[in-house]
Structure formats: structure tokens, C-alpha cells
Image (cartoon, rainbow over all chains, first blue to last red; front, side):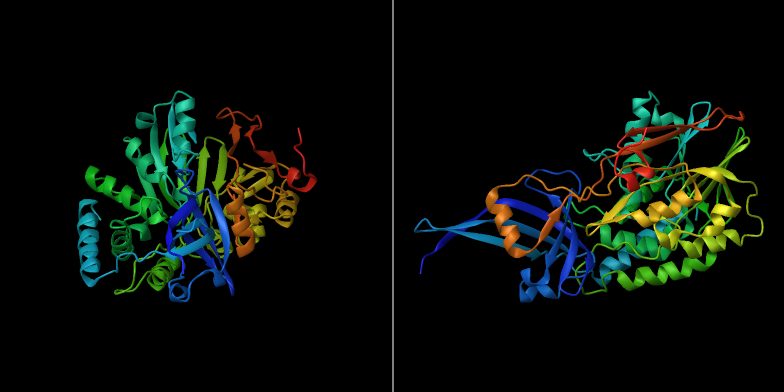
Length: 113
Length: 339
């Protein structure tokens, strides 16, 4: 069995889910490879492209990284790779929620509301 | 909007290809100092396509009052804005909520209260110019808060990016008058919202000669009585197109409907038949995409401007300029730019 020596990214996007269909989802994408400052593209991605463990992370607003490139083996062979990985963003905690409420109350007070 | 005497109002915000607010770019190109000349900024709602760059716009326009629907500064909504958007570690996935958070932080620092938009409320009145909000109605307030609670990540789950909620229940439509001229700016207000506007007991009377067509010309925002009771015949109607998943709004059917209401209808870009574009990429990337059946397209419109100008107080009609990619709506149907 050959050992791969890492993924060489030819194209990388960061995106978020804007619509979920029966067997695909629609997302907006930033082209990281091009150094995009704003969303430039939109993708329709089949759900079968997503690993089983990531399927339940697909929700409206979920954020992911999508990398297309190749992995080179020790023997020098190249294997094309496309990986969509949903990011594990920080969990919303009760402390976050309580702090946010305090901020909202204080901000409303400062705004004279 | 130029309000006369070098004073300006800005309604909503979007960005150019460099992430710079387009309103600032437009004003700076005219030699206007936005820090001193913009006296009112209105956020009609918090969807991305209407609020991008709003944070920078508010920071720059130091003399401007800020107006929005009151629900956007409710304790519940602000709690959601703060909890989901200020600790986000991604610099790219900026959302409407993040822009709103930036606006609120700026207002907080300035100790400046927003001017709330509600049915039939005057949000600006000076020197012959009056801007009045027509919406959102009170009944939409609670409905909106319920919707937000339903889509944010619950405690214990990863934070998410709040999706744009449909239908849009808290969009601020505006009635603008300057001397004998009126305009209706429809934001993304949908049909139910327009029924509430039409039912207002003290709704502004008169007919508008300019109409910003709501919700990109979509059928769900079309209320025929708006055209017959609030707008002049052949009102100058302007819309901005929008895409999602390869589908374009307005569709050809939408364009035909709007043209049946007014022959003076324009769009800030002509996207019918363009099919989105594709970026140039290495062949291996394209082959991988083809095998995966994923489709990547460039949905963004070229940026165009429909500029309407009229001498305040005169009986002359509006002069209409279509700049860059802006077009007459007939071009949606004929497929080429008319003169």
C-alpha cells in the first residue's frame, strides 16, 4: 500500500448553505484560491458528495470548506481529490446566550431604547 | 437619493467587487463628502443583498441618522445578533447579522438612537422633503421574532449563519416626497405587507412617479392595487435582479407583467439568457467537478445603475440614464439592448 504525501489544493472555496433540496444543496462560495473579497460563485452540490458523518451538519447557514486538488503518493502517482468538509464552529453555550442578552440590554440602554 | 442642497439619503447597501460600499463609491465619484452630506441611512431589512457594506457605510457617514424596523433592535433579535455573529472565527462568511452588529456597535459608541420605521411614520422632514415609512406592520413584529427563534442554532449546537427568512415580514417600504413629486421604494416587501400598507387609514395620498419594484420583481411581491392606487400610469419602475441556484428574478414572465403595468420599466442589469458564467480553472479542477456533478457558477450580476433626475418643483418628466449594464425591461424579452 503506498502512502500519500498530502493534499495539493488546486482550488479552494469557503461557502455556506442557502438552500437544501432532496438530493443536493445550493451554496454561496468565496473563491479562496483567487483571493476573493466577496462571494463570487454559487454551487449546487449533490448530497452524495458529502461524507456520511457530515450529512447531519448540512443545515441552512452551515459553513464548509471545499478543496479540489490531488494527493501524491510516495511512488509519485497522483489521485484526484474533492473534499467538502463542514466546519465545526464553536458551540452556542448558555454563557454565550446570557452574555449576549446582557449586551443587548446594555446596548438598548445606551441607545436610549 | 439627493434631497436637495447637497443633502443625501441612502437606502440599503451593497458592495462592489472590492468589498467597498457602492453608495460610497457613487457619492465619492460625484465629489460628495459622505461624512457630511449623508443625513439619513435606512436599512430596509437585514438580508445580505440589502445590507452588505452597511457597517462601513454607517461608520463613514458620521452625520447620518439611521433608520430601521424596530424589531431589529428588539432585545430578542439583538441577543441573536450578538450571540451568533461576534465570535465567528471566519473572516469570509460575513452575514447580514454581522453587518447589523457593526451598525449597532457604531450607534452604541455614538450613543445615537435609531429612528424606527413603522406604518405611516415620518422618519425625515426638512426643506420640502419628507420620507415616510409605510411598513412593517405591528402584526409582523412577533411573527418575525418567532421565525428567528426557529432558525438559530439551539444552545449546545454549532453556531450557524442565520438564513434569509422567507417570506420577508419586516421589510421597510418608503414613501418619499419632494415638493410635488413622490416616489415609492418597495424594498423586499411582499404581497401581504402591501395589503397592510393599502389598508393604512392615513396612508399618504397622491400618486408616485417613481417606483422601486419590490423583491426584485418577483410575483410574490406583486399587489395590483399598488400600481392602480399608489402609482401614476407609466410610473418609472426600477428593479434589481437577483439569482439563486441558477434561477433568475425577475423571470421573463415577471418582466412581462411589470411591463404591462408600466412601459417605463428598467433593471439595473440584464441577466436573462446569460446563464451565469464560469471561472477559468485548471483542467483537473473542471474534470473533477464534471465527475462529481457539482455545478459551480458565477451568479453575480454586473453592476449597473438606473439614474433618475428631475428638477424639484418642475413639471418636467424624469430624465432616465441607464449606466453600465442597466437596461430597459423590454430587453429581457427581446434579448438585446434597446436605445
